[in-house]
Length: 59
Image: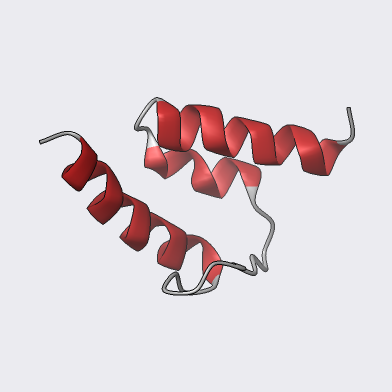
């Protein structure tokens, strides 16, 4: 498995599935481009969105 795919997999599994969103900075580079609408580019944009998302799914 390539590094990019491995990073994406770990970001999803550890960051979203396991709810440890802070790992985003471990699996993204200096420039992170988000392709989903409503989520800002960069690690901080990802963290902001998924903190909100995880809070909604855990209630």
